[in-house]
Length: 112
Length: 117
Image (tube, rainbow over all chains, first blue to last red; front, side, top):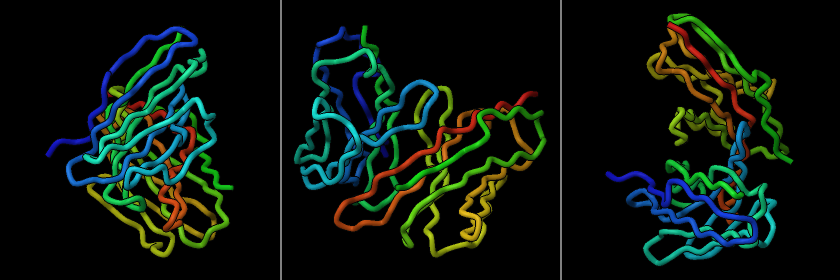
């Protein structure tokens, strides 16, 4: 039973660039949530997708956008990258929006 | 607004000692969930437990136990006879139950646990 997978594992970008991170949910899960974890801090909720719609959003600017595909996989896009966007980006999946979230290994993004 | 406080930034213990990680939460909702996750150096958050606000029974799973007290808004986690493999960052998290809006986890800052042999 495959768990949550994310790609790429590491990424280096420069300020102003755009980045796309990808997530495949755990088998049987239909809901995907994204979190940003800065070094030494707890994860911060970005948004949650269910039925291909954004259901809830945290306090992140519009530079952060996402998408969910019919196979339940998801992408996180960040435009106009800032140095402060450097973080570990975690994807979590669940069987429905209210159920326990299981996390993937994350994508480490470094913005130079 | 929801808030989770983990006052212990870092704890160091010697193997086989018992250790308790504290978690205090704030919410105005009557229906909510509490969680503990473990984050080893690899970075992946590992789910440990979920407890709903109507179930105050303590839970034990092997060497792990959890004490939920609504009166003090606390959800503490105890590891009995700690082992080196327990070394990790532990996060307490809270979510509201809002059917139409999904499930947003609010995390504490985490507690670094170092278990020395």
